[in-house]
Image (tube, rainbow, N blue to C red; front, top):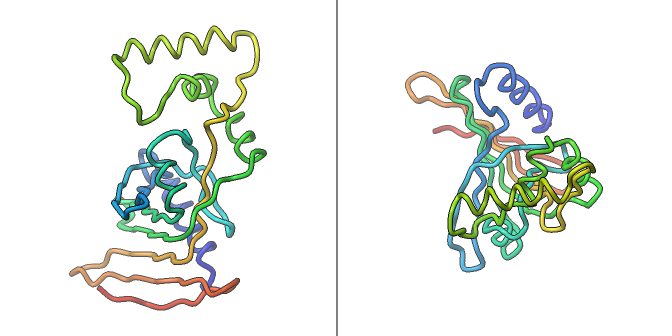
Length: 191
């Protein structure tokens, strides 16, 4: 198979059926303008040949780093399958229609939480955060919750995708796909 997206779809489908918790969890590595790295877990919310999508508050640290330095790496690790997928590429924001559609699919409580959260910024107490949530509940009572202007999606457009399969005696199998324009070249790597 020379299409990394078809292979991703196969591995992801297997993970969705076998992983107990958050099969769509991925580590997101970013770096600020000075090259200082940071990593955290996020959830994959869309994928295809145009990239891998996650959503966040644009006023938080990860969004700030992605705006300063629009390059990122993703890592899926499915321990029960003994597999990993590493993705590296450039980053851009999703369009408003894509972000609106995903936001509308979230639970109402998650939508309200997006209005209440000042992601990555300290608050005096948990009570202050819960009061902000209650204020959002009251503000949007009886109507739909619109997507906040400070909330949206990022798309990682891959330049490299590596599929890692654990093997006995640490003789792992690694398949690396590298983008060359609209095409992908494939090579096997060894530990």
